[in-house]
Image 1: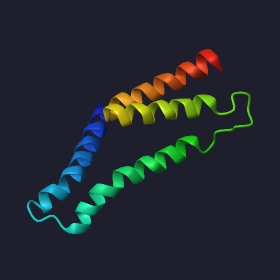
Image 2: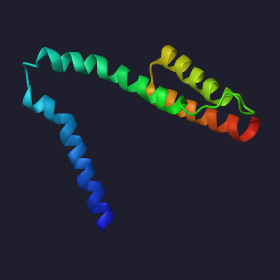
Image 3: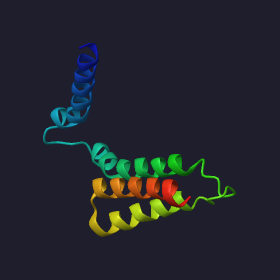
Amino acid sequence: MRAAILIAVMAIVTALLRFLPFLIFRKNTPAYITYLGKVLPSAIIGMLVIYCLRDTDVMSSSHGIPEFAAAAIVVLLQAKWRNSLLSIVAGTVSYMLLVQVLF
């Protein structure tokens, strides 16, 4: 029961933080908020890519092939269909298959 309450509180706080700018700036959104809304998603994705690939050892037996192949799949799917969920799931599944089956 305690875990359910904690999860509910975290979900409410997360939703509130996401909706708060829209509630505060109903019609007149400041230019810097609009700018951040445009540039932050790309910056966050870039940081995630660096974080995910930072410990890739290209001198190991797999030479980083599973990591870079999965990343290439994500990039290609995102460029073609612009569906983040599809790209993330396909990249994760392809990486796990490459690591478990081939390497």
